[in-house]
Length: 115
Image (cartoon, rainbow, N blue to C red):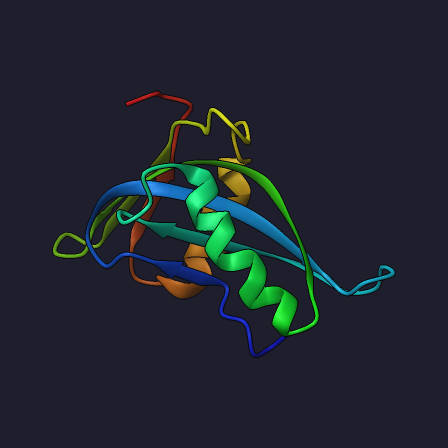
């Protein structure tokens, strides 16, 4: 699982994100990852890109929910909020903990606000 990055998000802007659980077929080790991009019109577009990539590496994927990320690289701030109509709201507190591993010098917050 070390080959898979915990976080892949756009370097700037406000965009959709999903929280994805990776697992080896038949159980065993599992891990949650964050993926987000402004290129996705809908949350499922992100999952449709991630799922085949992870399947090639031998993982099963499950989308745990989604929301939005506001990434301000200049001020080193990330805000996690909102929800996915199709997948429901991700546990933003889990997302923030994953983001903190990658963006150690950022101020990272979350809320249940829609905007």
